[in-house]
Amino acid sequence: MSCIINIETSTKVCSVVLSKDKEILFSKENYSGGSHAELLGVFVLDAVKFARENNLRIDAVAVSAGPGSYTGLRIGISEAKGLCYGLDVPLIALSTLEIMAHQVIQSGIETDYYCPMIDARRMEVYSAIYDRNMNKIKEVSADIIDENAYSEIISKGKICFFGDGLTKCKNIITSQNIIFLEDVYPLASGMVDLAEKKYEQKEFVDLAYFEPFYLKEFIAIVAKNKVI
Image (cartoon, rainbow, N blue to C red; front, side, top):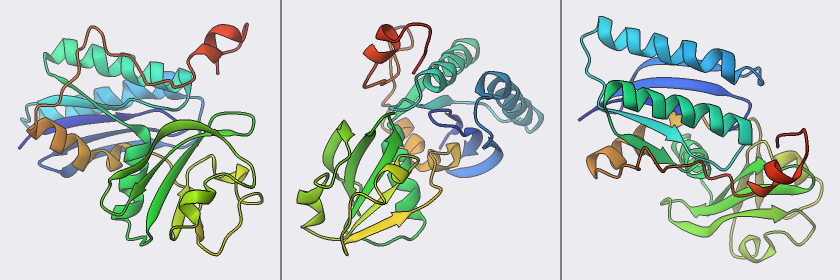
């Protein structure tokens, strides 16, 4: 049983949720993109105020750890770390792709496999594959999309593709075994169950050394005057 602030900023959506015992008590979301630095601090402050006004003790902070937008992840994790230091509470890190898969499974979409995709620029996506029990079938990777992408898993059963990397796939990967699910973004509301489970198991990360899972961090170093 715990009260957790959940933070998600890995894509264009900025969202914050305050949950207690898996129940969402406070929620803020913005889908406009590009405003994470301006909005996140306000959302978090409002969540903390709500907790104090309702005599709730915040027990932990959960953050979406990537992969995703380099800038978005930096903003979210910096905010989460600062909040943990200020409140003297532990930090929980969650895979962004796992959050997305959990959201779709919880929404009632039934298929054999679930493949969340996050745009990684050019013809690449960050993806992983899960079964309906949230077992990871394919590890997180940066995949180049062509007509043969995911052909092995597609041949084994029905698969649902979703996320902001979806548009790269719809006209390239074709099969009767595919479901394309539009407008799925990782949200703080989709973190609640996963964060609670990690809290109960005391799966916390080291505040001093934890870093975002960029997956393609080198791009931010190589590309001059441009953060990817």
